[in-house]
Amino acid sequence: MEPARRRGRRHRGAVGRGEGRVVTGARDFLSKAMDAAVIPGFSRIGYAVRSRTGEWSDPSRADLEGRVVVVTGPTSGLGLEVVRMLATTGAHLVLVARDAAKCAGVVAELESIRPGVTTEVVTADMADLDGVARASREILARHGAVHALVHNAGALLARRESSPQGFETTVACHVLGPHLMTTLLIPALRAGAGRVVTVSSGGMYAVPVPDCTGAGTPEMAADRWNGTRQYAIAKRVQIVMNAEWARRESGVTFAVMHPGWADTPGVQGSIPAFRAVTSLILRTPRQGADTIAWLVVTDEKVPSGKFWCDRETVPEHRIPGTRRSDSAARRDSVWSWCEAAIAARRG
Image (cartoon, rainbow, N blue to C red):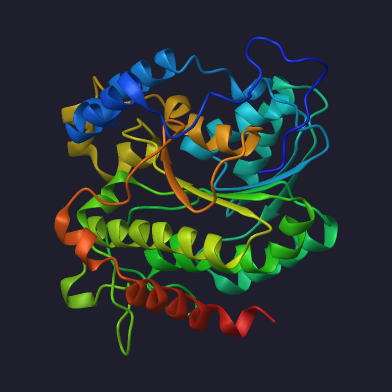
């Protein structure tokens, strides 16, 4: 990643080297042990331990003056927390959302956080490829260089729906829309020595890499569709696409992360039973969003194509069966399926 400029000399709280890495020694052992037990690692316990032992600083104190940061899904949950943190960095924030009225409310809040913050609102549903293409070209026409693109928009659906182009909506929103936007914004991301940060989920650990050869697809058929599993599949595909982008594109840094278990409106509305059981240990939305913001602002040279949680790289697999599914052929098939799906709108 290109170093983020800062105001004056380094100070306590500057977002510099040594705050997010592949850790070693006792801290590494403790972090891995918490993740292996799942509950400590994914809950507020894991965040508290890692943030304190890592001596983290606040991403909102970084200096991104004049740089362009695009964030999808900024009106609630993790996306809202990310733009709140970035408001004080001097970045020009491009907010991509379905609801312009909600975005107006977010803009007003950001202006109260930092008077003079510069923002613009671009209306698009990330599941609608025509809308994504229009929004991406609008952004590209206004900005020759983009410092960061954050793919945060998403939803866990209660029933199977189809996008305007006929794709299963979960896959369209979490995979195809982001892939198309990244593809169209690549010239600006290259010009800005930029970074793409994708928000995945630890739920993807439960599913294998889908086989998209022949008639294969990451979309679940209507007769066996399950919202939670479809969400996990889409999140697994995000991991694959992040690595595949990194393998193909050297001028941009790619990172995908999971936020642990955070108490967001999405969790509250989509999986209330889970929230009822875990409410006492859920992370705050800001804690869940921390690694997203850190990946946007850090001046540390992070490796492209990796999977992150709590400012550390983490494994892409924890279950032997899913690890066995992860072959170069399957990854290529996923990339090819996504490329074919957006082909008509990339030119």
